[in-house]
Image 1 (cartoon, helix red, strand yellow):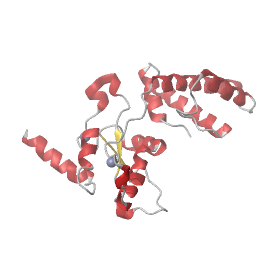
Image 2 (tube, protein in one colour):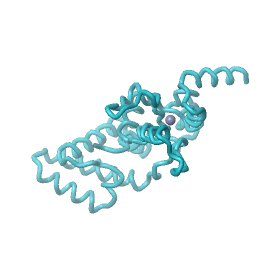
Image 3 (spheres, protein in one colour):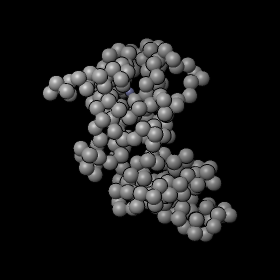
Image 4 (cartoon, protein in one colour):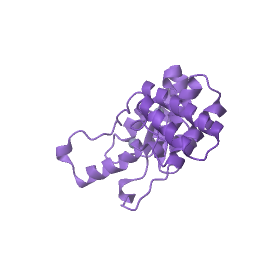
Length: 208
Ligand SMILES: [Zn+2]
Ligand SMILES: [Zn+2]
């Protein structure tokens, strides 16, 4: 598994790499992860030593030499990416008072953990893009380079439909939203739907 793969690719593009090369870097990292059965992520790629030991383990596999070289390049770029990335932000719906957990609140935390699951997040962004599903704003268009790759991910499945066998589907259960719209979606006791908030938003926007 490669954590934050989409953000990594955006990072590479922002540092001047062609988009198709950036995607192939992502695939090299996936190959490393599969061949060595390791997670490539913020907690596993923290230093030059981590990179060196992975490259050493790779050299013992039967991959072609130039393939191994490319894996090394992609891995070193991932280390730069980790070094320059901000720690994960908190969702606006984080529950602040743990003493007052009810069954519903516990369930809410479980449900919202899907919004912070990096691989589900990345898949959702790959499918739905980086524009807010409610107001359509794009952080890249609004804030330029510092906005690249930024968006919240909202989990739309109602609490009542979640049981322990539930597996999140990033295409149908997750949607990208900006933090403003995300906060509004969660403001009512039961989160409201993307569609109804979009209606409210569109109507207000057309009146202004
Ligand atoms: Zn929005
Ligand atoms: Zn949400």
